[in-house]
Length: 299
Image (cartoon, rainbow, N blue to C red; front, side):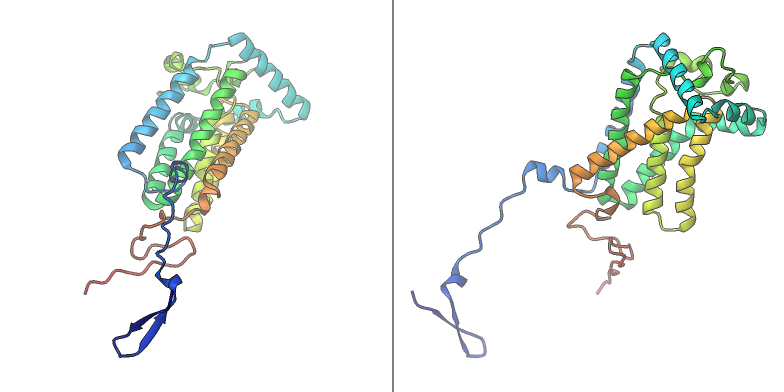
């Protein structure tokens, strides 16, 4: 087989090797697993439906855990005694100190009842809008954290300090007649009162804080992000809704969530591309390497 002679527009001749005439072999289409693990821009209707169904399922399972009062109180006594052995049983002192400051404890009650919903949903919306390429992986961290927490509610029923008889803890919601909390008062029967370990107030707030600290630009916003789980820890202890060890359980669940997301997506969720592959960032938006995308010009 000889070489083919080609004539260029300028009249020169060129030769082409037979290998040049071989058509390129098309690459095989990505597998279903590859497509599932590839970050993509989320669909709004799907995300709203997914979050609503997931939280409904979480609440249903959490509240379906048998109310094992005797075992929950026994576990609470064990944790309280263990903390005293460590010299770290400070929950009652914090509870009494903060309860004596009326203007502080009442906002803390409302903080406990509402803010973990408001802030978590707000961070999800922010991720969806400004970090679509990182949204699914970061959302997986949150969902995996919440899912594994359900095992804790089944395997280790735990009464919160405020329900421990004879230990002198103050149920701040009841004492100050705070409206709207499902942890105490008239709404208590709608929620499992013995699902204190792990604390998802800490799991969710730390997820929010780390996400904000890693992805937000202004330094003061990063600082606020890190202060949020710290403030949440103070609140859950001051209102006698959790032991500090419940917070440690929430952190362990969050670690599981990050590990699962890392294995599934092959990288830390915050280090994935800000915009899914194949999409063009908005004019002036920052790319993952810190450069700014070019502005679009009309001819």
